[in-house]
Length: 152
Image 1 (spheres, rainbow, N blue to C red):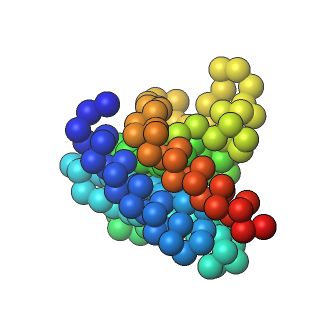
Image 2 (cartoon, helix red, strand yellow):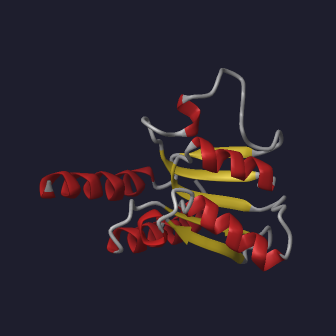
């Protein structure tokens, strides 16, 4: 892990905490330009917006596209606290993001659990880095679900 990955994953974690504080599933994402500018941020807002597609990655990608004025994010990096679901992985691929940095795996709903061997939903030249600040990313989501189960 390098300093930039650690720093930007920290921003994604801040988004995840914002989701948690809104009683949303605590996943956060940021899209970073090649020059280091923050192009878009997002955290889960499916409850608030009553929209099953309002995932952190989708919102961050949309914000970045608006910032750039175009739908393609080639050369950009996406930082996300939890492995993207298949829907978000598809959007990441369509947006042509070339670098995806993931905090914690999602053994139940992550894109990698449903893919056939050798297939990737991402751009063919995309680089995927996993496990950046994994402990923190895993803890925030596990703590959220532990607390939710205790309420019920």
